[in-house]
Image 1 (tube, rainbow, N blue to C red):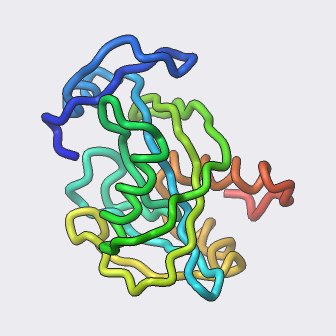
Image 2 (image 1 turned 180 degrees about the vertical axis):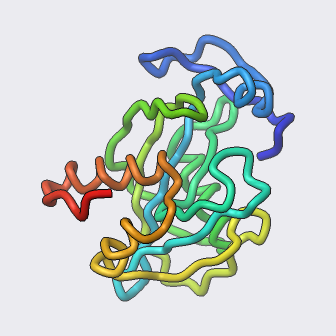
Amino acid sequence: MHADEILDIVDENDRVVGQSPRGEAYARGLRNRCAFILVRDAEDRIFVHRRTATKLVHPSLYDMFVGGVVGTGESYAEAALREAEEELGVSGLPQPVFLFKFLYDGDRGSWWSAVHEVRCDLPVRPQVEEVAWHTFLTEQELERRLGEWTWAPDGLEAYERLRAHRGQPDGPSL
């Protein structure tokens, strides 16, 4: 989506209270909706990437989720599939499985975040506008990188909540 595309603006209970162009929503800190998708390959490794320097939010930071904003009138499920296919450069993915939703409240804004997971057995060709670098890491490799790389804070919070959702112990302290 581009800065002029329209987003639903939502309240603290994820109810739509208006619409705004994406760029304006970001500039004014208006709460919107995002889909986060953890992608695993056939070997159960997690897709990890560095965001491009041109991203409006968290440029050049690492992330273990693909995803993005939910457009006006779009469901979280629709956004999750669209975003996963776009960012991975694939088509024909299964519908990502919804896991949970949380309200992210960070220094760059606030958004309702629906966390999903999907398996991608297809060869990926990540979208160059979104992904500067990528690899697939085992969970153990990812855990080692948590303290070494600078992560997008919303993705990091989603990952920590995912671990708690699955009843996993905390990883290394950051």
